[in-house]
Length: 173
Image (cartoon, rainbow, N blue to C red; front, side, top):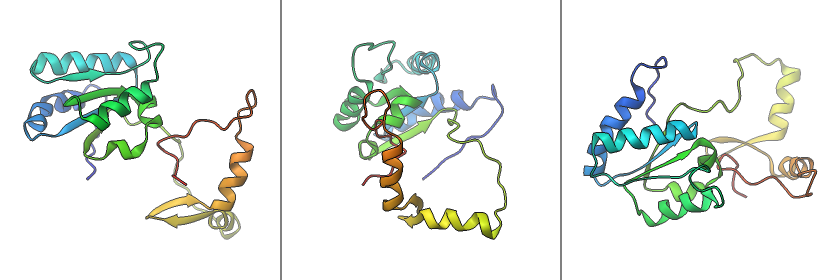
């Protein structure tokens, strides 16, 4: 289920989220909140604790754990369900294994801009390449396997020769 709270900045979306957390915890739900910045992640944690100090909130970002893998820390908490509420940044969410989200209520505060594109019409000439290099898989538009192999060879890290780290947004092989 996807819930979308859309309003101008300062209209209370994060406040409404914080107010709803105690009820979710009483329903034995586990909540993962992804914030766009470390400052907002810290602010959300403080506000959740002010609202209900009985809720165990764990927060993970690079400023709190500078020499550790945030990805591993978050995945461990998600897998072991150590806390009722876990807070991380958008970047940490992007990197974790999507399978670790199973059974968690995921809240992405301030949706990240993945791609800024206005909708547009494609003529037949421009539509053809789109369908040539993509396919529908599990109700998602994906790059074909052959094209994915070609793209991977183009996106190697020029300094190390290694592929860039996988992302939660990437499609599992």
